[in-house]
Length: 77
Image (cartoon, rainbow, N blue to C red; front, side, top):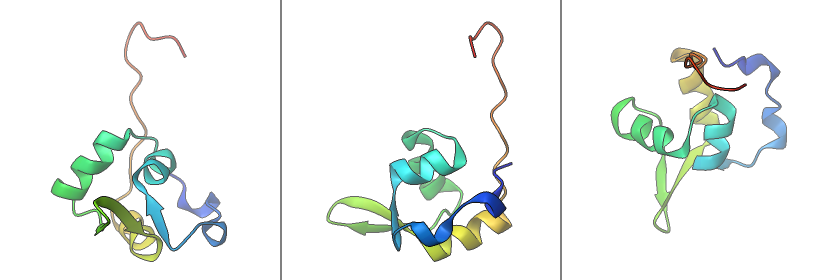
């Protein structure tokens, strides 16, 4: 799971980009887009791009912990 206790929320802007969210939860931007559409991840369209409100994302993450990726066989770490 993503350890939200170790995230420095104060240093982040009020709205996060898809790439920033993807980095926080260790997923690809494509996966974050899917989570917006299917898992209720809060997002707002601003000038044709999704932005995730930091406060709502933090609350969502507390209710929906993100599990770490399973490593695939044969991949180099």
